[in-house]
Image (tube, rainbow, N blue to C red):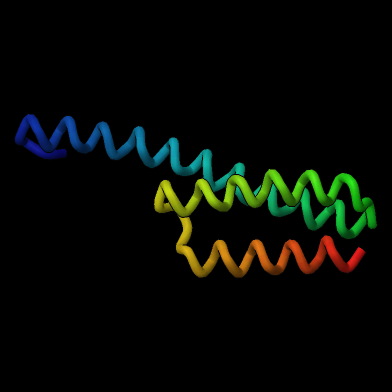
Length: 86
């Protein structure tokens, strides 16, 4: 561990941020899986609501620097295409 007081504080802050971002990543992955599960079950209404939630979380992932813009665009397009195919 660091010897400098400010670096000790920074290490603690980094741990807190890591835990928070891990939770956001998990929620995002779960939302994407919910959309795909609804598509597999051919449930249009559930898939549409799950898609809206996933799109919201994907947009938040860009602003919090969890995922890259291109990743988010690709996922949104892929999920929308899957829902529209029902």
